[in-house]
Image (cartoon, rainbow, N blue to C red; front, side, top):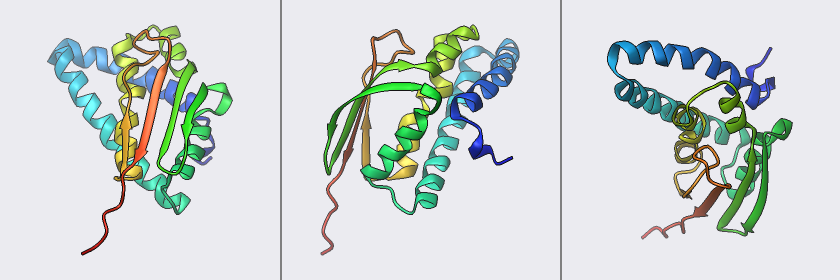
Length: 161
């Protein structure tokens, strides 16, 4: 079976069920902050690679392609969102329900670990997907906010001299 056929929410749950006890065991030996920092770096490195690979597979990395990616993230009702802006240079939306955050909470994971396993991927993914896209988010459901604000802006391409 191709891993891409497994719904993303299911993949994240499998990862969390393996990583959470492993992280706790490592934290008991090496200290929680050090282990979480290494985990965050690993997750972000993988997200950058996944973003670049996905852009290559799609054959494009514009905002329309990003919107397709976001729709994939929404699979199995994993995310509910309200689009706030969509034009040639901007794509912004608010996530009003996040099954990822709910799943981590149901598994008994600390919000901090859930944020590393899911939320910390977002900026790194965009770096790999399209280095000209800028990502901003100020709050997340994982942290207890009423929603997650996602703002993507495409930088103007500089003209060659």
